[in-house]
Image (cartoon, rainbow, N blue to C red; front, side):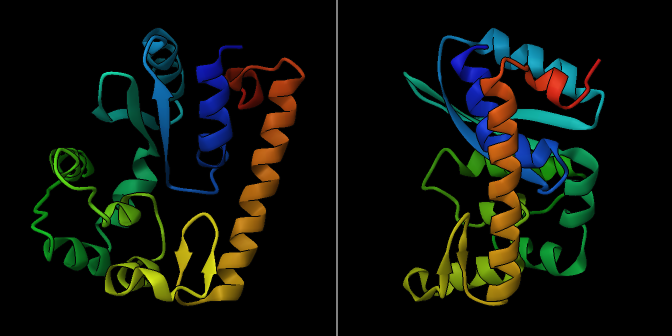
Length: 178
């Protein structure tokens, strides 16, 4: 297994497992063929691999479950929140294109919404990044118990996926992609 596939499994496996709407992974350039192959294979299960940003050495790849992302982005609270940042969209693809454009400037912290983070925590981070009450997969400002349980589920899932990969199983084998 390539280092690229392993990194995708380690950082995005919780998304493939259905625990998260989307994940981000930073990958070294040079194995784009691996990314393309996995993208094609996972597309049949509703996943999209989107290049958000690249520089001379690295690629920032966003991996999401399209249907779940669409449902979340069209919830009234999320849509109103993103409108404050200038997002106007008729589809998840349009919203992602706008995010991609915003990635060319300063890092857009509303990206937490696109990763499925609780809206209260994205708002809390934008209000005061240093006042979080728990720091894990994201900074938590409300519902600490629920977030801690979610982080533990993510940790266990990721550890299980890594164990399978360490034993030689590919991501397509782990997630039963034909």
